Length: 389
Image 1 (cartoon, rainbow, N blue to C red):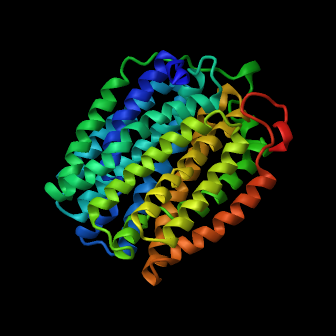
Image 2: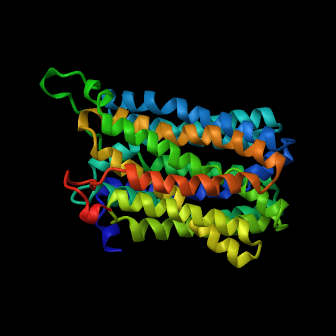
């Protein structure tokens, strides 16, 4: 709690904004594959729609990070947040799969704000470490998303799946308005007349970690797109139970980020991958609600891996190039989210358990790779992490 109070004024505003965003996002995140099914999408089409949406985010990351380096981070952040409010309204108003897909693509396009947001949080962190500032600010999102999946599941039964998106759009609008008082951060100029990005593109440590980051996230994220379908189709639970499990996932994300936010990024990255593997194993092991609740709490390891990966990457670059660096870094999870639904949809159509079994094996392999290849230093100094871990 003391660390939360020690967030700077700007990062407190971001945490509050992310709370409202998490509130809206959680309402539909876990029931979305079920709504796509209601709109007429089979597993392969569902994977295709989710992939198209993720592709929109992936394509926005690098341009947004580059623009933020040149004009400042706040304008790009506000643009992304405003786009989210519009996208929520489009998804709510959509009457068919085509229009809904357009709205979902717009919503995922808000990912353009993630790289500038991470860079903003890192600069506005005050005396906190990068990883602590990132995990505490993102805890706002997770706090908002604790209750909203359960509410979304219940509302989907009472009002229908479509109505949930209208309520989410209101939450996104509130999230957007909270960010207006943010301080404008000065644009950092390259030193000594050097090219802004020349050093970044020659940074072999940075580039090598990007490959590891892609492989690790790809391994565990294959388990995400059809988890809700698996709970309903295989474990035979009703839709509202999916919402409650989503709330357990958000609670797990909040707790893990608060408890492990002090960890050195390498250690936190390895732990998060191990938790993600445990989530897949439990999901496959039993359909009992208690097992699934624990599994969905551990599912949060996938989001923690992103925060810890960002903290490691932020340590490897200079302030003048951090916008593009984070843009490239955030392209990794969004590219994974583009490919994972396509692969998962194909595998799920063959056998519902198959995407989770493949993800489990790849996840175990990725832990070994991360142990070997992840940088052995924290996000605050160039010294090796104690014990090499």
